[in-house]
Length: 217
Image: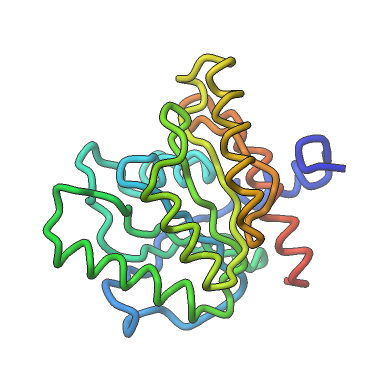
């Protein structure tokens, strides 16, 4: 039974994300990470793919994660804690692929992302956000390679799916699945979401609850 049709996981996810979610930490470097606790899931994606909007939609809070029309605003690893009894933490990662940033800044962000992925024992999964209007780009493929090398489980989440015609979205889904077949660390199921309409949020919440169950949290 998949998360999409598992009412128990859907309801548990709803309750967890209806609880108290709050900002706890911002890490500009690997040396300033918070102590490891519970289970962490991270959100990665190109600049302006909608990571902050997704986190806000997941938690039902309009301003938990800062959103901006300016690419590259998130320059740190941002940590959010949920209800104490849930044992779940969300991590908003710096957007990658922002060409207008200085090369030094891009290199710094990239190093932070890579080192975090390779050394965080509590990190259960990375959700790689892909703009449904555009599909996978070369810079996305680079991060998939990094995730493969880091042996971190990851799953593709399409954002802004409501802004894509059904036929085009199906084509991008098929093309993405073909690419993922070459990446063994990738979770095979894709998730379609829209922060604006809330579509896909129950399924994404349920997926995180399943991770908690698998980790025995």
